[in-house]
Each structure stands twice: as structure tokens, then as C-alpha cells.
Image 1 (spheres, rainbow, N blue to C red):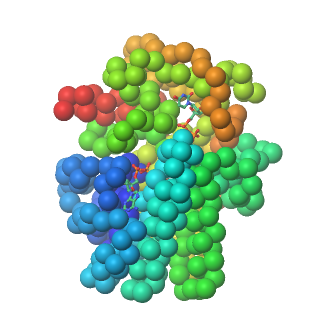
Image 2 (spheres, helix red, strand yellow):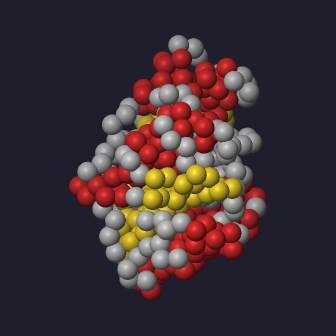
Length: 334
Ligand code: NAD
Ligand code: UDP
């Protein structure tokens, strides 16, 4: 298939590009490089043997996006592009709504105008908001209890896609709800390399390990969990990338929704212990106050993805730490 990845030079997009090229797909990327670097394209080539064609463009630039679709007939779009920092979304909500929702509408318009009818969208477990059970299933209601504008953009885009699919019944829409993507490609050539100050647990652990931040603040150890720290479902980014390859095979008219997670919950303290085991060194850390909006525990029920996509995670938390350290070592040598 000829596939356009929006946001394809980013963390998850670049790993997915590698897996798609390895499976023989033609991959092209559009990204405005707001949170990624063009040098990632050479890294993709080094790993997968082929450099994706690249368009530096903003999805909000409807005319330019339309032109890209008019020039090339894509079989599928995988839509990663978006702003994703929860804290920042509270500070600049309008920019988040404009970029994530506006960008998606602009993309869908260009797709419809140019007869491209398949889309896979990067959603998030955050759309589940607050549930009674920590095990999230695709059939649960989404929306209520989402604690930040970023999460609401994901929820709203899902709703837009559902409406769009009703109005355009020949469109094939797959929504993938990621749990907590972490780790790096085992080559050490690509990984999570956000521009600016990181927000998520693993990039912060990496910054602490390389001395850019003095210590990890563990946000709360008084949660209702066995060790008091929050529990999440961490998924190796290569497993996640393979989930996209699997999702392509089952695209069908209408909207299909899948959780992509391991189904296992891991606490912050367990993540830190696994990192220390892999690095052989203690990680400087302090217990800090709770972060606003954090839930004590949630993880995926991944049964639907296993049954319908024939996909499940294969890599462990130890693999995640080894690959993260390998990436960190290479980055620090640059
Ligand atoms: P990322 O920031 O590394 O990649 C996103 C890319 O989109 C970046 O390269 C950025 O420059 C680009 N981009 C943003 N707005 C754009 C626009 N208007 N036009 C063109 N390019 C634009 O993020 P990621 O971690 O790879 O996440 C990819 C997708 O997965 C995002 O939609 C994110 O919300 C979603 N997601 C990520 C996580 C996670 O923890 N990483 C979890 C759940 C969902
Ligand atoms: N976390 C932490 N210190 C940090 C960053 C994150 O203790 O500096 C915790 C956070 O409270 C959450 C877990 O690590 O319980 C994962 O946080 P992240 O932001 O990576 O993912 P999300 O909260 O979106 O699931």
C-alpha cells in the first residue's frame, strides 16, 4: 500500500514507518517538525533500507495538504500528527484544539476531495476518562471525566471520525487507543526525543539518567495501589508500531476501535526499579506531591486486538529499559 503518515517523523510515527517499510509498504511522511527532526528520516533509512518521501507541511495549511493528496493517490493515511503534552494543553488550550481538531478536519477534507478513503487514527486511553474498573474495554463509554484539553481533543476527534464515517459510508476508519508507549528501536537510532522539556515518565527518567535533570519526582506514593505509586500499562513502541501493521489488514467500512496495550499494570516504582536493574545504577529520585488529574490505576483489556488483529505485545518491561538505555547511550555519543 502507499501510505501517508501525518506526524511520521515523531516518536510513534517513525517506529511505525520502519515496520511498514519492512513489510513492503510505500511510506510517505508529512510533518511540520514542531516536535521532531528531519534527521529522523535518515535514521529510518538506516534501519529499514528506504527513506520515506517527506513533505514539511502543517496540517492546518489546507491548501498544501490538498495539493499533496492531489499529486499522489494514497491508499491509507495513518494520522499521528498532533500536540500531545497534557500540561501544556492546560496552558494553551486553544492551540491544542486548533492544531489537533483543525488539523484533522483539514486532513479529512483533503482525503475526501481526493478519494483517499482509509484512515487509522492515533487515539489514547485518556478518552476513557474515569471508569469504575481500571481495566479499560473498547465498549466502555468515553468522554466524561477526561481531565485536560489534550484528552478532550482525542475524544472530540473520535466523535468527528464517527460522524464523518456515517456521512461517508465507504470510508474505512480505525481508531487505535494507545496506552503508555515507551522504549526505543533496538538499533538505538530512533526513540522518544521530544523537542523541549519532557513531561512523560520515561523521557524524564532518561533526562535524569543523563544528568539533564537532577532527580525524578515520583508524583505521589499514597495512591490506592500495592506500593502507593500509580499504575499504567506501558507498551514497547515497536510492539505498538506492529499494531498499526496488523490494523491495516482488517480495515473495513465504518469505524473500528482497538485498545493497544499489554493488559498488564506496572507501577512507577516498578518502572524505576526496572530501569535501575538495566543500567546497574541507582536513579536519583524523590517522592513529590500528586500531579493534578492522575488516576491511580488503569490498563488495557487487549482481547479485541488479539482476536481481530491477531496482535499482542511481545516485548517486556526489561526489553523497554534495555532499548531505552541503548538509545540514550547513542544519543549521548552524538
Ligand atoms: P510526537 O510529538 O513525537 O509526534 C507527533 C508529530 O506530529 C511531531 O513530529 C509533530 O511535529 C507533528 N505535528 C504536530 N502537529 C502538526 C501539524 N499541525 N501538522 C503537521 N505535523 C504536526 O508524538 P508521538 O508520541 O509520536 O504521538 C503520535 C500520536 O499518538 C499523537 O497524536 C499523540 O497524541 C498520540 N498518542 C501518543 C501517546 C504517547 O504517550 N506518546 C499516547 C497516546 C496517544
Ligand atoms: N510520573 C512521575 N513523575 C514524573 C512523570 C510521571 O511520577 O516526572 C508518573 C505519573 O504520575 C503517572 C506515570 O508516571 O503515574 C506515567 O506518567 P506519564 O505522564 O508518562 O503518563 P500518563 O500519566 O499520561 O499515563
